[in-house]
Image 1 (tube, rainbow, N blue to C red):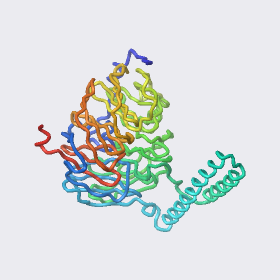
Image 2 (cartoon, rainbow, N blue to C red; image 1 turned 180 degrees about the vertical axis):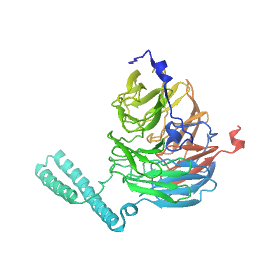
Image 3 (cartoon, one colour; image 1 turned 90 degrees about the vertical axis):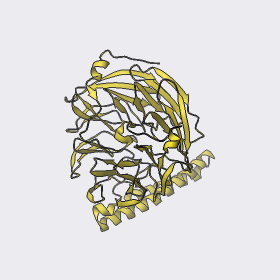
Image 4 (cartoon, helix red, strand yellow; image 1 turned 135 degrees about the vertical axis):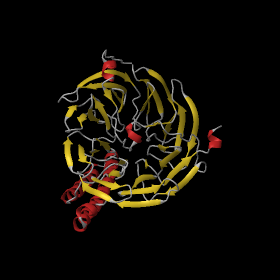
Amino acid sequence: MVNVRASHVALLALTLATVSFAAPPVGWRNDGTGKFLAATPPINWATDSNIVWRIETSGRSLASPVVVGNQVFVTAEPAELLCFSTKDGKQLWQQSHQYIEVFGKTEGDRIEKDLAQARDLGKQVNDLQRERDAARKAENLDQAKELEGRINSLRERINKLQVFPPMPGGDTGNTGSTPTSDGKNIFAVFGTGIVASHALAGKRNWIKFVEAPSNGHCASPILIDGKLIVHLRNLIALDAETGAVLWKAETGARHGSPVAAQIDGTSIVVTPEGAVVRVSDGKIVAKNQFRLNHSSPIVHAGVVYAMQEGSIKAVTLANAAADQAVTQVAWETSGSRASRLASPVYHDGLVYSVTEQGILEVTAANTGDRVYRMRLKFDGGRVDPSVVLAGNHLYVSNTRGETVVFRPGKEYEEVARCHLKDGFSSSLTFAGRRLYVRTKKYFYCIEEPDTVRGK
């Protein structure tokens, strides 16, 4: 284990704090921390147990639900924002975000036509690549050469198409980004590069194409200081009221979402790529502090924690008001080399993280020492959803619909294992006594009766 301590960590911890909002926005992982401390959540459920309501959704999505008062919002392919009543799951409204809504019918139809043709040609390219690789493996070089020529010809046809914007890639689709709300409006970002704002009653405030995102767009937006921060290809600040672009910071997007924090009263955004961007003007005041592929960093009491593949890192930041922030590695320790799709949670001096194979690692936040490490023994599947703390329980879920519920602390204490037949990749959302989860096919509202909870 490598463990580097900085003597001034405690002092800097007093100067860096999680952002405090006058009216706290709600979005991905609640406020980006993965904590729902005010919840009194269920700890037992199944497909046919403790289900308040279940509705079949019109299209898939990797995004998490967002609860605002008595409304809950979800996204659905191809680019839909839907609003439901928390009481009974009744759909209240739906808004589409196609290119036609932004560019008009003529241009919107042309874009969709070119995209459809490009997708078809791209599928042909993928099929031919598999045939070419098989021919190379069989040492049939003449066939491999002929297939390579056909591949290049198809690529030339794709390049001649006036596709705008470029096709989104990966398996995340257009709806990997969780919406966010300021309590009056709901904001949504799509893998097409379209961003929109709606009043909670459904009326559209504004809609616009911002820029073509990087392949496999999943980064969720942030509301801070009257700005809507979106991470498409670059980190961009929009005026939340009008949608006008205020600044653009050229820092690459990853699958994970950026998070908000403050340094000495200066609002900043920390990106999964390890950049620190000042919210007031978009100035990049630090970069390359770490590099995360899928998960997000977290910030607590002055320290940024990043769960990299193979290492866990804690970084303190200071002097963000200047053009160059002061950064210091508080500690860096070895961790599992497996991929981390799930984002971590900080609670009571411990950082909880999990690999895609379900290896739970609990780390002391002040020193980087490992508290414990264990495999959660899921029945297959992959841990895509992020770690969540609701009330006084931690939740880790996988793509087969299984959730492990355990207590926070220095020793592992499992409370329950819950299962939904339909798997999911979105993270759990809690509000009051209820749990909301978006599976591959359904949208669930779950609540545990008092008679069961009291046992």
